[in-house]
Image 1 (cartoon, rainbow, N blue to C red):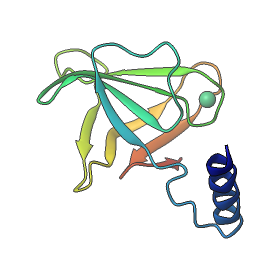
Image 2 (cartoon, rainbow, N blue to C red):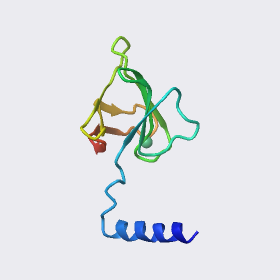
Image 3 (tube, rainbow, N blue to C red):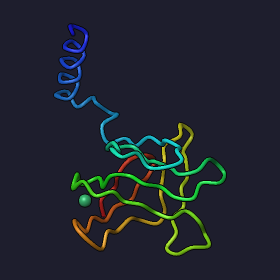
Image 4 (cartoon, protein in one colour):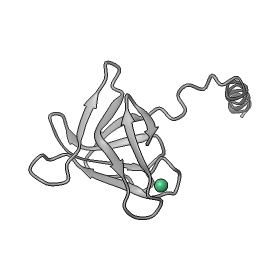
Length: 115
Ligand SMILES: [Zn+2]
């Protein structure tokens, strides 16, 4: 109880100071299927390296839409997933939702770059 209150307080102070660098940073989770309640800032990768075939993640604009992208080069459209030295994911090309919020962004080095 006390611990979580202290932690929340520290996180709030770090937020005020602009030091919560992990906010908005995407991490990769390899899985067989997308979870029922996907979390924000998590890139769910279906399959295991080198046989990864799709990614799924919540739209970064917080509209709640689940974005699913194909990684198989034989199917179109197809995205490429790369990982940085610390596992930070990048997706190529950009993601452009044609429906709903119409968000257009890059995921680069684990961060969202809005277009
Ligand atoms: Zn959205």
